[in-house]
Structures are given as C-alpha cells and as structure tokens.
Length: 445
Ligand code: PMP
Image (cartoon, rainbow, N blue to C red; front, side, top):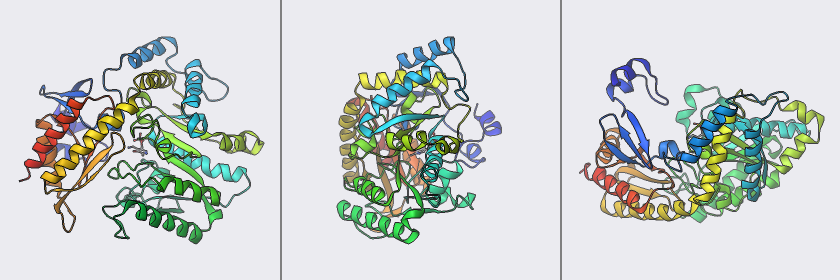
C-alpha cells in the first residue's frame, strides 16, 4: 500500500515527493474514538478525523440514516424546481438549531471551502441588491484559515496559503489577530490586545472607506492557524464595528459549529449573532461531505423581497443539497443534541487544557499552551523560550511519532501541536493523549 500510495496518490497540502520520503500511516479502521493502522496499532485519535468526527467513528444512527436514504432517494439535485424531503427536513432542523444565532435559511454545500465561497459571494450580492454596488472588499484576520477556493484563499490570513496563487481576489485586507503569544503590538494581556486589534480593524475600515467593504470574515476561535481563542470582548467588538459600518459579519464556523467550543456554536460562545455562518465538517460527523451556509433573516429578506435579488444569486453546486448528506446531517444533529456533546466538550476540554499546562511546566520546549474553550487546544513548541524561536520540523516529527507509538494521533501544524479529538471522549482518553504527548516531548531531551 505504501508503494502504491507513493506512485499514484497526491496528498492535500503536501509536496508530491513527501509520501516517498515519509510513507503515511495507513489507517485501516476506526471505532469509537480510536483508529487502527495497517500494522494493527490502535491509538486514540487526538485529531478527530480533521476536527470533524465529533461523535466518534461508531455512530450507528448516522449510518442507518445514510443507508435508508440510499434506498429511498440516493441523489437528486435541488436546482430548478425540484426538492426532496431530506433537504427540507434538514433545513427546518437547522432553522431551529441556529435560531439563537439569528440564522433562518440554509444554503447547502459540499464542504467548508464551498461554504466560505458561498458566503463571500452572497455578501457582495447583498450589497448590490441593496443598491450599494461599491462594496466589493473583504477584511479578515491574519492567521485566519478559510479554505482553499480562490475566494477563501484570498481572505486566508496566512501568507503561505496565498503567495503561490497570487494574484488572488482583489481587495482583501488582513487585520492583526488577537494572538497573545506573538503580535505586532508585543501585547500579552488578552483584553488590551483585543482592543488594539479592534482599533486596527477600525483604522483599516477608515483607510479603505467603509462603503467599499462587503464583509468581515472570522473564525470565532481561530483553528488551523494554531488555536487562537480571542478575549471575550473581541467578537462582540467586531460585531459592533461591522454593524456601525454596514459591513456583513461572516462567522466561519467550519470547525466551531456543533459543539466543539463547549457551546453549540462559536458565535453563541461569545454572545454574537453573525449575518452569515459557514458550517461543514462535523455537520455529518465526517460521514458524508456536506456543509450549510446559514443566512440571517435580515439578509434573506433583502434577496427575497426584490426581483433583482432573485436574479443576482447565480450560485450553486451539483451537490448543493445531496439527499444522503442531508439525511446524515439530520441524524448527526439529533445525536449531537441527544448526547449534549458541548457539555462533554467543555468538561474534557478543561482537563485537556490543564494537562497541557502541566506539560508546559515540565517541558522546556512548550512555549505556549492555548485552549480553555472546549476541545480545541494547541501547544506551540519552541527551541528557546526566551526568544520564542519556533522548533524545527524534524523535532515536531519526533514528538508526533513518539506520541503515536505511545497511544495517540496528534496533529502537527508548523510549530504547533493541535488537538481536536472527538467530543465524546472520556477522561481516560484525555489522559492517554496527555501521557502520549509527555512521551513525545520527553523524546526531545
Ligand atoms: N474554514 C475553516 C475555518 C476551516 O478550518 C476549514 C478546513 N479546515 C475550511 C474553511 C475549509 O473546509 P474544507 O476543507 O472542508 O473545504
């Protein structure tokens, strides 16, 4: 398998030769919160698939819903005058689920990048339909991640994901993220840093001209950029600034929706109602590629009350509303609520975060620990705590490999070890992840 992999498969985000030099772990099975590899080694999945397998790998109700839907209606598009019960029932359920977030309509997609693209497009059209044709720019956070379509890549805050594809979408500007460990202000106090970042946002809006900006997009807790939870004043501050300037607020909740933060959504965690919300990943627990871009009643009304609004949309995918994905999502939502997963995410997340802080006290290589909001945590590794010099790639690989041998799959992203396990894991599973990391970090000495 490893030879065939190297010969025929090009992995995402990887150099084609990487899998020759470092053959991947071939995963042959998964059950509960564990995965098993081709050599028969079983470990706790500290990555949760890819932030998406919130309910673990053995979710029978989702499996049953998928097979029943395959028997009833395996596929039909909802373009041009057709619909079906699976997509309708899911939309109704999402409307109830997202009611506290002020979101009432669902636009279906096949993943996170599609949800982001949909939100960016809709934001521009919203302003056009309202007769504000000049609003075409977007603002976002440095270190934010918004997928890999050209729109999402343009608002991505990490230049590594942008430069290779330039020129990207014109008119995208990036604001400093509330990242206490490293920031241009050298500010370590989270509340003061939030104010500085909000001031930077206001400055950028003034510089660009408020009437030129369509939307601000942000993750309520930044994920792929290294798990960066902002101070509680930050997202409410962004909401206020956007409202004051007529700018739509897009919450990219591809990671944070459906319980990961310990709340049902990341926006709710901070008490904010966005205008648009991108979801995907955990909406089907990873069982089917699917997403929903949620729309507020106010935004929906603008499009629905006007003929030009209807004509302006011109956007959709073959798999906008795959009935099998919708059936999977419906079962996943029911199971997520039945198990009240945010409660477990908050409790286990606290244990994980405290355990990581203990590892920081023990291991010199741990420069920063971030978490404390459900089951999204990260450790930033450094070769020198005083200068915060990031650790080299070979060392992070040692930590990852040793942790794997000691019982846990963890994810490396640059100098960060990112943890996003299934939300249904137990305290014992948390301890397994922590002791595996302890072994991994000890291997650096
Ligand atoms: N937005 C965020 C916040 C993400 O974390 C991701 C994926 N990690 C995406 C968008 C893109 O999602 P996908 O990979 O499903 O296209």
